[in-house]
Amino acid sequence: MSNEPEAGEEVAKPKGKFSLKLSRKMMIIAAAALLVVVGGGAGGWFYLRHGDKHEKPEVKAATFVDIPEVLVNLSNVGSDRTQYLKVKITLEIPDKEAVPMIQPLMPRVMDAFQTYLRELRPTDLDGSAGLYRLKEELTRRVNLAVAPNKITAVLFKEIIVQ
Image 1 (spheres, rainbow, N blue to C red):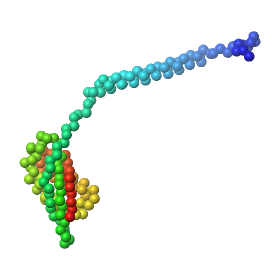
Image 2: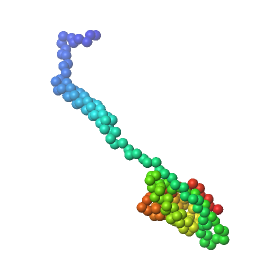
Image 3: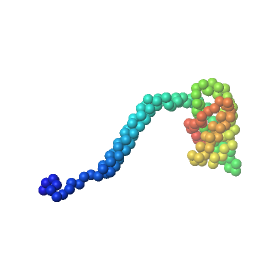
Image 4: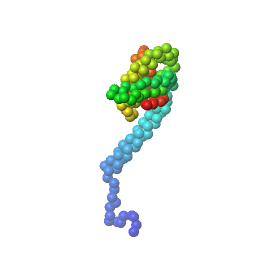
């Protein structure tokens, strides 16, 4: 058994169209692969070379201002028992430059706290949803009191309902 053709057999020759189609497919695949490699390299170069121009802006550290402790009696409509709310609060201010502008307005802030907190009922403070609403309302009232300055958030250090 040899691989050579015998005297009467013809050797099968590849057709011209088949080899031409095969070579075209190979050229298209090679061109696509080359395009992917060159495109990926160019994209990587562009990202690494020009990516530093799109740096994130610097985030300023927040400043915190403590508010004096607030102790108020809660609204007790229909109840014989008086309940008290004791709160320690810190204001989050976006930058240090705003602190000297907000400090003289602290009597307004304390007044806003006192008048709002005295109208609360113990049921208004139930659960995390109640505390969230309290935090949002106090933030809104403080921003009104210190306008045009602005605080970022009201943070609770301590909350006691007795």
